[in-house]
Length: 599
Image (tube, rainbow, N blue to C red; front, side, top):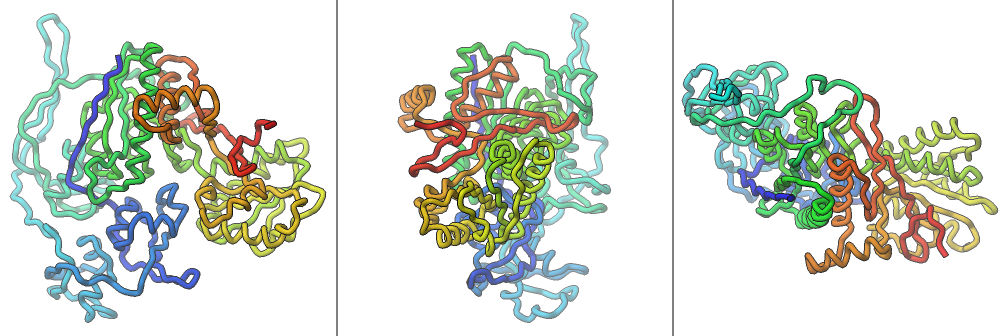
């Protein structure tokens, strides 16, 4: 029988990541923007708080963010020329060596705001002892609590029972504190695991606004009350090496433990996103329907569901719990910054992990326990390139260079994959490269023209389609096909007639045919259970849960609704990625799988 547990963990909200410091103001298409350089730990919700601009507006201006933030990425944030100064303030006494940037990080604000509150600081250096106005903080410089030096607060031992068996217990004691001096290469996460205390609590006790630490820094660590706990010991084969090679083997069990890390945002706190919350709920609804089917097939599973939001501190607190060591599978989390934390935990503790959303290619690299269910955009363009080499050798293939530097990885991914596949093929059409201003000159009569425009940017896509239509729109006989990304389907500015006229296509790892018999049957079940129609995200949740549980635990193939999970190991030391491909096409204003002939 499948058992499900729902854990709602309500911690103090944590806004991880670096602050923007001095973000230059740039002009783009006649509008002014802050140009924020993404640092490790940044989140969309953190950017919303820093700049006072809604997440929806930031994503609308930067469509590539639908795939998540990447370190080093430049994000345009609308700037109206004014800095909001109507905030509660307090005084801050400058310490030796402090800078405006460092103070802005401490008070979770920007250098621009500090200068607006203290105009005399512009163009000058801070002086030790100088008092400046800063945004009010509940506890920016918490008093350091007294510390009591204590012996090693942790110990573990075995207790022999009368029948000769042995049980392992872990003891913690002392309700005082210790001073910990940060050593070279230590991280806040590593310290939290060493002392069995959450990152949040360490930050709160020490009055920190960032989880960054440096060598020599002194942290006050509160120790927990004495307790003894029985710890479940997992039988890990001696042959397992977290840095080894080849597949990792798992022994079958009578019952499995599965954790689902899903961003429900049930507390609707400062990081709440209605859009993300709805998608998370739909994914969970579909997964529950799959679990019912799996139970009928014989799966016995103990399901644990956790609301992670988009909060790295919460994710760290979850996996710090010793109960996570007994998990057989972790599905989630949904966001890149959190995925890397869980991936390292799974690698160290021999637990399989399924990423249900698109992740960068480097996530499964060097980690044999990671299964990336959704290919990244770059991987999809590599798969598309190989597909076109194999199927379009008699056509003209034109790759158009995007305007934005951030789009170049997609461009290079297609180009390199096409050239590599062409070298292996018996015959292949030569790849022609062009720019936005010149690509229309490649249109030829009497041959199928296929233009690849690798961009997620709304303005670039609209400009491309307008140029194409201006050049070729007067003739309905020119055979032209345009290849872009899935995001184009959501760009309302692009006339649907353009997408239909130029047989717009994009690469995808799934295709939902709502008219197929299995999908109709599942939709009826979904309506009966939830009183609403089946969404694409619900189908995805169904497919992910059905495929991986069937494959891992039942060793059976499963009937999926819209996905093909062609999971291939990147190399002997790495995890698995989904290399399945659908090429979807707009025809007569409807979306079809272009590989299946239609009447």
